[in-house]
Image 1 (spheres, rainbow, N blue to C red):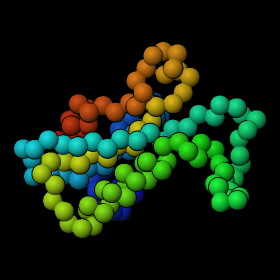
Image 2 (cartoon, rainbow, N blue to C red):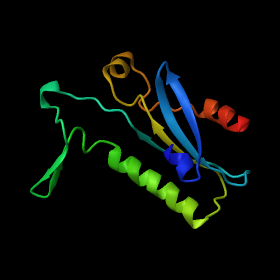
Image 3 (tube, helix red, strand yellow):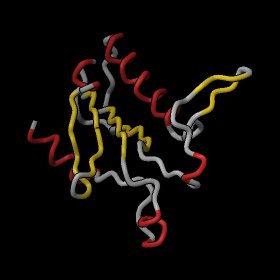
Image 4 (cartoon, rainbow, N blue to C red):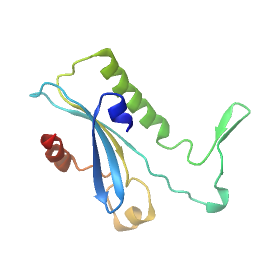
Length: 130
């Protein structure tokens, strides 16, 4: 997985049957607060008739499904974590990078569910096992 390929501890966190968060951790020495950088990885198409089969560039603009969604923010978060690891920077606390499912969708909107499902209490239990 991407986290492990870049020397970052990873956890696959199940939030529902067959639905997962991808979580990476750069561990600090402990005793200091942790920082979580969180971005969603799910997409909802508002109008199925407007689905673009293949992204493309035209006139200096990028066209594609949900191109302005969280992808650029999540790419920035992952790039920052990779740069910190590569530079050998020792943070005082843990850096937790969470690519989460559950931000988008009719079920969450109608049931009033959470907007970015990340179980930090369960994450810490899973991380303790490692």
